[in-house]
Amino acid sequence: MEPYSFGDNTSWKLHCNSTHHATNGLTLASCLGNGVLRPAGICVLSGCDADEMYEALRAVGSEIRQTTCPDQLPEGGTCTIKCGGRKDNGEPDGVTVLGHFTCIRAKLYGAPTCVDAEAKSWMVAWVLPKILGAFDFKGALTRSVNMSNGTIAAFRTNVSKSLSDILLNVDPSHFEILEVSHLWESMAVDDADTGLPVTWEREHLFSVNYELIIWDINVLRYNFNALQAILRPSSSTFKTFEDLIHMRANMTISELFPTKYPITFNATYLAPDTQLSGAARLSGWRQLRLLLVLLAVASLTHVLSGLLSDG
Image 1: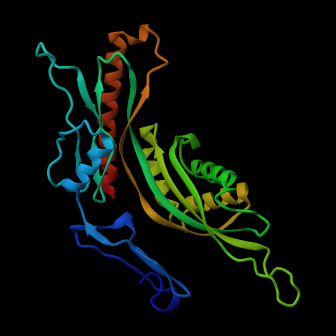
Image 2: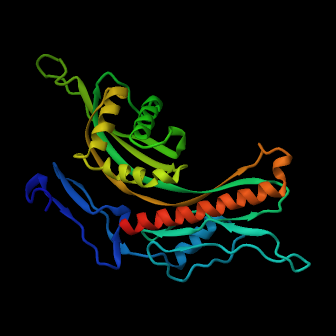
Image 3: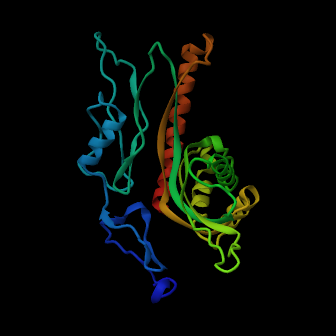
């Protein structure tokens, strides 16, 4: 029991067998009082099976049929799609694979793709680490504030800036996804005798779901640790985030709790290579770009393998 063991303050930890894991990484359950339970996850079998691989292939593209994936991929394991073939003259067609899948919590993450180095339509390709996670937080705003999902735009901006500021070398634009939703607000209560407000504040509950692209692999470990630390109320990271939200939104955070513990994996990104000049399309540029991609993949594999083993 952590930290209490009876009544409305009961909390407990979920322990799964070594062959299973808690969904979304949630191992702590808490009774919040008044019969409200914040549950832990459930224990599910670890590893990625053939059904999950089929779903991952559907997401990558229906034209992809073959992979290097075994029938059962263990947690932390990686595999990829098969690309390339032969031209009519028997030479390789120049199509190579970029990126791979990673099995995390029984789901395949990543989006490997086939890159044609000889295509007429050039593309810029990156393999970069991504961190994704989610949390809810509760805080008090003055009761005059009209807060709803229809009026949340400015608050969303404040959250994105504050979240970026607790990280290293991260701009709000680096979030591929940053969803901030308003879930609930407390009722405005007035004194029955005087008609005056019992309190000038209302409690609000928000959810945050993020997917962050890390453009500098040297700060991956720091930012991954920071996004874990924000979930601990005793951490300096949480205190900084709390102060930033108060400064920008005049909100006092009373509670923050995870709904999906952060995970990290390699992701593949493609963009039209519209900025290249004709000179840049020469073979020297092609070789340099492929070299940079290969170096990036090797470096990211080393960094991510360390993070996965730490977890």
